[in-house]
Length: 496
Image 1 (cartoon, helix red, strand yellow):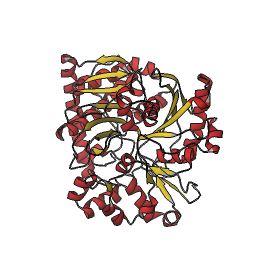
Image 2: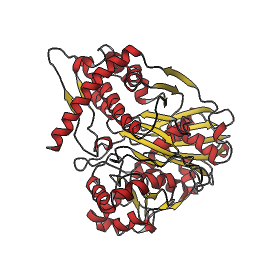
Image 3: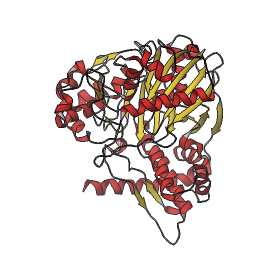
Image 4: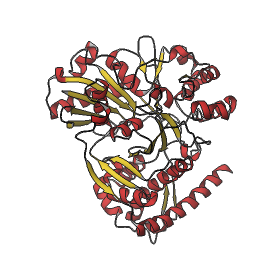
């Protein structure tokens, strides 16, 4: 019995075919082969065409079938993971009205800041557990204010994963977890926030109907089945944002457990059984995938926008070099990169910096001393230091993070990156043979009732455990201290 998982990223669409009887992933595929483009019509804006996501879902499914031919009738469920916080607007014919405003777009920062002031800190922090910030609700209000002719034509608004579910099933639906990531959700009231909708003058009818995270969310239409060469009526049985799904894929479901990922952005995501918040909204709380009545499970998320994108930018700048060779060369430089510091904040407003857009910065560069290896290492270390900075905020909220789980993918393919994170944050890192698409496939099996949460992770293996080293921790503590001093100076100069 097979299940398919899709991971709708901003760089590519990944697909996985899971044999639920053995827990083995039979095939994985990604499309396109090069990173999908992100449109930047103005500084700090970021947009993508939602229809291009769908086309790459079709392409990735075809690649999956080539790797492991299968009978379409053997696929018993489909799961969706997706880039969070985006906004897709469709008309009454389900046609996209404008490019999607994606997660790293910063145009609505001021909109969210005004809402935080108007609604008041007590309401926002105790009911939304976040400032409205630059999240989906604020992006929708931006359209209301700046593109009224578009807003008037909107029939439904949705997150990127909701849009893919619409293409699969023909039905506009969302989840409670999804509504929380858009800051539409009132946690204590356990319903949509009428106060936020009223303030933003958003018609509640624009929101899609709610379906369970695990469970029937619709069935493949004949058109979608034909495009994917799957069986009509195949159920969609799971949906979650990429970070809650990454945590699920790593079996991070209970308080005290934490997951991390380092793709285009870098994230640490910890599960908590209390509604908690950061007063400055530098890290954010959302509804986790296994939350239910009387069983609070929230996910506290810190995000560093400039992670894999910083590494890929450097690779493109250098030219003909593989990531493996970049990692090998970076390891030739000493820990701390001989005083060279990189602040990787060049991918939109950074939440951990209070939604400021400082731009990326290189500090301490000495033309007589520093070589290419130093820059390669300094970029990886700058990413690690940014993650450590965000983890400190989580610690101040009362979260105790000593062990994190990660899939062996993206930046975690770099031994230097893994060791630097373990020693800088003084955490144990467990690496597993999984990714977001596999997690979505496992979620689909749970949602279809074929697996239970406690049996969903058979076939998943721990590939490596990276323990912090006392001497290395001391070296990285010194380097992180220099980086933190530089960051404080950078932020102070930005406030002048």
